[in-house]
Every structure is written in structure tokens, then in C-alpha cells.
Length: 348
Ligand code: SAM
Ligand code: FES
Image (cartoon, rainbow, N blue to C red; front, side):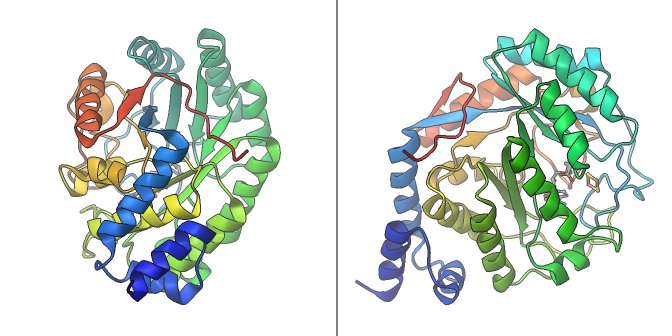
């Protein structure tokens, strides 16, 4: 057995590695086949061949933040802005429910129009109409009181990527007003309240080093999230980062596999960004250990406007078409979409 094989078997056994071994594993393609097959074995032990679907509703592209990488950042004057009202959001849920979705993910920029009162009103309406569904919010940094109010209104999951766990790197991706510490506090508040929490990061974001990625893995070990979303950084022509190139597909897949081995029970999506960087990126993500896909339920009329990065896929298809397309893709990859709330499986 060579040194890399030994490293992978150690990772499978101990769900951990020293920093230097993690870095070495991330920096080589030589062990990818073994790494991906080990990750797939572990995902099948925990989740079988099941793939959970989440219906993504991108309900606003207004944002008060100015993240340097993001296409809907406040200062992008070229962005055409939109908001969905409660009825439009409920219509997306109704369509999604009929298509077999039992989790709705409400995602948007940090849009002050949606006060806590408005968010609670929307969440309660969904909770009332779809009592058997999970409601996930992904609306950024809020106070603990706000998170608690959403939870009491019926939300039970929250996605907030930490983006990078290195404070200096965080400072290169965000303006002064945004702090890594605040993000981390938000994540721990969400956990304390009782949400199923998802975090994650972009792979290949500008200035990222292998050491930064190791720090991301260490932070996730500290947080112990239920969901871990990662995807390649993708350029958007109207951001300050327009000159930086896209993140790497192989490195993203390697990280998905490493995450599966470190967090066997985590819900790990094969993200839209992965499908954007390569036509079969999501299938590759599933084979490397991912077990969730998030088809779009947003109205086709606003899809293109939720423009986080260039060439985003699935912006023209009806929800039913997205669902059908993914069903086929997941089956072709050797897995099976299930109609289920798809809670995280806890270790027994
Ligand atoms: N406002 C919420 C938040 O900040 O968590 C949710 C919306 S935000 C657009 C969702 C995620 O999109 C971010 O966490 C970020 O990782 C990802 N994202 C933004 N711009 C991206 C880009 N250029 N390439 C890849 N992912 C990007
Ligand atoms: Fe706010 Fe991207 S800058 S969602």
C-alpha cells in the first residue's frame, strides 16, 4: 500500500487526519479513484442509494451586502432586482409539493424589505399549508432573536455558509463591515435554538490556499453541522472579482469525498455551481459522496435574475422539467431520488 492509500484508510477509520496529511490529500489527484469509492461506500452505508431533493425558492435578489464574489451584491448596478410576495412563494410550494418535494428552501439576499414580521408571516403560511414539510431558510446574518422568531413561526433548518474559516481570507472576500466572527456566532446561535444547520464554503475562491481549506474542515469539525454545502467559486462579470478564474472541479469533488469521510452522516448537496462548472458536475458530486440535490422551484420569470455567477444552469426550465431532468441524472449516476423530508441521520 502506498502512502496515499494508507492516508485514505486512516481517514475512513478515524474520520480525521493531521493537517499535513489533509493538505497532501487535497493537493493530489493520484488517489481520487480510491477516495471517491471510499466516500461512496460510506454514503451507501448511511444513506443507501437515496438522494434527497430540496425545492429551492429564490425569493429576492436584493441584498444590502457587497460580497466581492457575488453577482447580486448591492453595488451591481446591472442587476435587475425582484421580490416574490407571500402568494407567489406559496404557489412555488404548491407546485413543488405536487412534484414530491417535502423540503422548501427559501433563499435570498439580505433584503431589509423582508422584516422579521414578513418572514414569520411567510414561514407560518407555509407551515400551515404544508405541515409535513421541512422549511429551510437561507437569508444570511440575523440576530439570535430573529432566528428564534423564524423558528417559532415554523422554520426548522437554516443554511449559512461560513465561506472561509480564515479571518484574513474572509477579509479579502468581503468588505470591512462583514466579519467572520459574526458569521460564526450566527451559526452557533442557530444550533443553540435547535435548527438543523448547514454551513460550507466556496472552493477556489480568490486568494484561497490549501491551508485555508484545512481550516474550513477544522471549523466544520467544531460546528458539527447537519448539512455541508460546497461548490466551486464561479466568476461573475459584474463583480470586483471578475478577473479571477473559476474554482476547480476536481478539487471540489475531492473535498466532497473528504467531507463524506469526515462527516459520514452529513447532508451534502451536489450543488448548482457544480452543475454549472461541468455538464455532469452534479452526477460526479453524487459519486464522490454527495446525497442531496436542490432543483429550482422559483418562477421561470425571475430565475435568470438570481444571477450569482455567470452561466448558471437551469434558469429556463419549469420546476417539473428540472425535477424530471434531475430524476434521470440521479438514476444514471446509480442513485434514487426519494420523496421524503430527508432529515439528517444521527449516529446511533
Ligand atoms: N444571503 C444568503 C447568505 O449570504 O447566506 C444566501 C444567498 S448567498 C447568494 C448563497 C451562497 O451563494 C453564498 O453562501 C455563496 O457561497 C454562494 N455564492 C455567491 N456568489 C458565488 C459565486 N460567484 N460563485 C459560487 N458561489 C457563490
Ligand atoms: Fe448578498 Fe450575495 S452579496 S447574497
